[in-house]
Each structure stands twice: as C-alpha cells, then as structure tokens.
Image: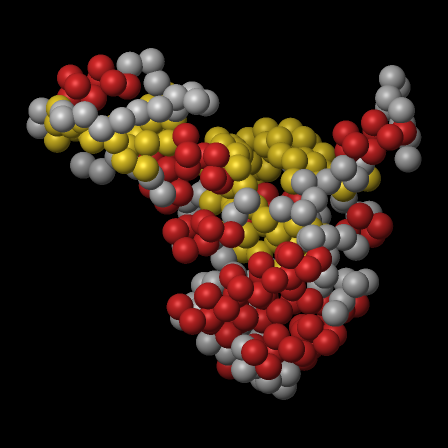
Length: 307
C-alpha cells in the first residue's frame, strides 16, 4: 500500500481506517442522484441512514459496496479501493431485498437455500450455524421458493444473509419492511446482540424511524442526494428543541438560533431549533419548550411544506 508523503505508516492507517467515500457523484441519464457526497463510516458503530424516497439511500449503499459504479469519486476500505477489489469486498456485505420476479419478469423459483449458498461463496466469514439458527427463529424453510414468500418473509431472508455474512461492514436496506411488530422487535434484538458480540459496523436504512432510533449510535440524514447531517443520535436530540407560543415571544427566544423548521398558526408560532453546545432553554408563561424525537428532527429538516 502506497504511503502518502508526509505521513508515517501508522498515521496513514489511522487516516484511512474504516469505509470512506470521497466526492461521490452518481448520475442516471440527466438526473443527479448523489451530489458530491463525502462520508466516513467508522468501525464498531450502528448507523441509521434516513431520507425521503428518492433521496439516494439505496444508491449510496450500492456504491459503498461496489455493486454500482460511481460516476465520480472514490470509495476505500482501510485505504484500499473497493471497486473490483476482492480483498476489500470480503469485508463488506449489502444484503439487498429479495425479488419475487426475475429480471425478465418471470417468477423467481430460486429457493432460500440457493440464496444462502450463493452468499456463502462471496462471504469468507459466512456463519452457517447462525444462518440455520435464524431460519429457525424466523420459521423459514430452506426449500421454500422465493416467489412463494410474503413481503415479510423476503425481508427475513435478507436479514439472515446480512447477519450470517459476518462482514465487518454490513448494510441493510429497509430490513423490517413487511415484518409485524413482534418480528421487528426480534430483529432489533438480534442486531444488537450481534453488534455487541462482534463489534461489526451496521448501516440500517429505514423509514420506520421512531422505533429504530434507540439502536442508532449515529444518524446520517440524506436529502436530495446530499448528506445534510451526520451526528451522534443522542447529541443531536439533546441539541434540538421545539418552541411554541405567541409569535413575537418565540422570535425573541430563538433570535440568532439555527432554525430547522417553523410553522405559523395565526398569532402563534412553532419552531424547531438546533441549540449551540451548552445552551439551555426553559418554559416561560408565554412559550413552551419541548424535546423532540429523531423523526421530528428528520421531518423538520427534510419535510415538505403542506398547503
């Protein structure tokens, strides 16, 4: 590995450790899906990747895992390029949604067993016993054909592949789609167990923000192809407040603050703000100060104004 001029080998390794993308652009036809994205994913964290439909989440994950070439930019794992590099890709798994139809539109007659066998060929740390255990927990049968599975069962298959891959960096795109509340809770439980035991890095892209928020150490918000926020989840929630009351009183309290969103209701007003470190706000007779959830922060930053 070439060492950058002016750095020791130890500094070079430290500066390149993890999965890093720099200046990633992705264009389909005339549409720019990702706009100069810079992102560093550190080892040993669970990240939440959230954004509206079409924000570029799946495209970003597919580029990070070299399943899709970037139009511009680079992705490296521990300093090694990811694209067409087996040594790097052995450490990365993007378990994508199983499709009940083939590319030609016919029924997908592959069995669950076939998917697991294919995954095991590409993942050198594949855990066959864990895969078997998860199939039993999800009440899946290896001989079941994909075209006969429900939406929730197909999500279970992607979860099994992701966890059993034992990849250092594992991406899950809408993993709980179609799962009932019991199975969703089970997924979060086994994800945390695997994270605690292995120290792997997980990136979970989901629209079900509120129930998943507690497992995210850091949250990444992607909006219109750009990363608008990457922050420790608890620090983010501690810094954000919703302030409501008479418009003039709210304006006076929030003067100079970073306003994420505001809404007016006659002479009253509500705003979501991000406070400077150490800044405290308190209720007054005219103004209410309330904590916010991760979902509320996301809507404040990326929500569309409704008529």
